[in-house]
Length: 65
Image (cartoon, rainbow, N blue to C red; front, side, top):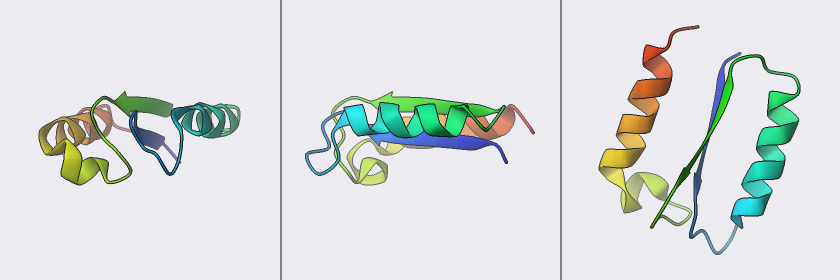
């Protein structure tokens, strides 16, 4: 299953290092995976950086499976 991990760089409840570690676990088993770290975003990336979050998802989905 294609997997996209989207992480807020400024997430105080889940540091970005945890995102890198999660991605490493996923990428080891998932051929089509991606990690996107979004600047000036906390835990609710979809609210903090609406346009960049949506663009990230559009790009990932446009690549197909």
